[in-house]
Length: 213
Ligand code: ADP
Ligand code: AMP
Image 1 (cartoon, rainbow, N blue to C red):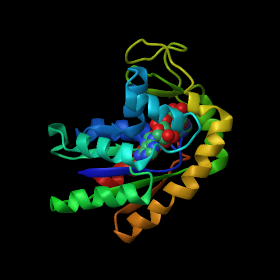
Image 2 (cartoon, rainbow, N blue to C red):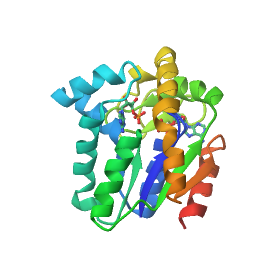
Image 3 (tube, helix red, strand yellow):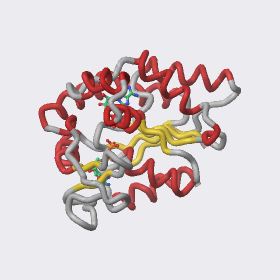
């Protein structure tokens, strides 16, 4: 099963993608996590990506597409995957589509986690991330067991540089301009499913599994 998560930054794509990956036994692939791992390890790719990410801009397609196509060609993707944060532009979606159709394959579901802009600023300012294992929490809605510490790996939680309110505004604008058109793209392919992302995390997940099961 090949799944794409769509939605504004902070809509809950990563939170749901992790749950989907666990339930269906497929890898969760987040281009944002891959970039953050590169930043943490001080790679050239990380240094370049950071200049865009910190401004709330998209990393250029030339850097992003190859990285994603290499990742989905790996062995663990044989039974499918859930993509979180890719594609984010029409050209990215077209490249993925072409690569898949070359293999006689296609995306099965594009799940649009729908959350209005008004809720997004609150989601992002309360988000706390573990840069070690990629786990995500929310100070109010999904708190860790021990304040400031990741439940999974015990590392400290941080407010991402790009989750500061001034950057979030840019990211929302970029989302509406460059990523939202993907809703029409996947509707035209007959694979778009929209869920109400303002519900409790478990209710959002129930709506998604009702589609996938
Ligand atoms: P995205 O991957 O779309 O950027 P995340 O999954 O990281 O979004 O979620 C953004 C923030 O909102 C995180 O702090 C997360 O813990 C929180 N969150 C996710 N889903 C819900 C939900 N259904 N209700 C409340 N908060 C949520
Ligand atoms: P995310 O973790 O999905 O919120 O992504 C964080 C940031 O990484 C985004 O704001 C972009 O700067 C960059 N990024 C992640 N995925 C992509 C992508 N598919 N295309 C371009 N930039 C991306």
